[in-house]
Image (cartoon, rainbow, N blue to C red; front, side, top):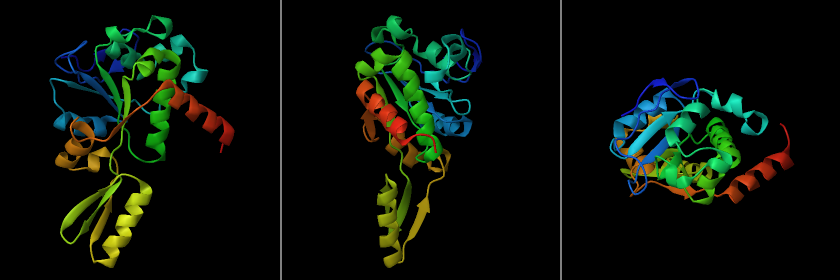
Amino acid sequence: MRSSGEGRHGGVSKLEDSAVHGPGSGAELIVVEGDSAAAAVVRVRDPRLQAVLPMQGKPLNAARASRPKLLAHPFFGPLVDAIGAGLEADCEPQRSRYERLLLLTDPDADGIHCGFLVLLFCHGWLRPLLDAGRIEIVRPPWGEAVIAGEVLLAFSEPEFAALADRARERGGGVRRFRGLASLDADTLRETCIDPATRKTETVSAADVAAMIDLIAAVGPR
């Protein structure tokens, strides 16, 4: 198992690796925002199949950075090393050490932005992984409401607002989660980590291109 150490492309990798890799292994690389999120996920992951790699701050905008700068980056360099599939025209999904790359970020503005920056990198440098359906976004819960003794989870801001209204009407309580580390272990495992119960969406190159176009249309804010 590979853990913290120097990556081939520079920077210190904080990868907590899985025990198995390669085609047919079912191995997954879970990318999270920071060390606290990584520690929480490591505690509930399947160490045989699931590796965890935290970002080191907000990633670079890959559309504006050179290849040497990206490979020297403290997150993108270790990410390329961990996946092991190559870059651009040399990227071959069958060489990837993991069958899936999962983006698990907090459901807030910073988390959404970080996730987009990773997808932007994948769109420019790991496109074959997108084309092969190897990249997924995990949808963590926004919060919970306790109504008549039952714990209900919300997976979007509108859903959370509706649950909060119901809870207030019936004298229940609500809690907005503050990052992955604020989830209890069972909830984190069930909603974000366990393949049988988590909520994920496969991302295509067309999806990322649509995001790029939308942001370009909105412009800087």
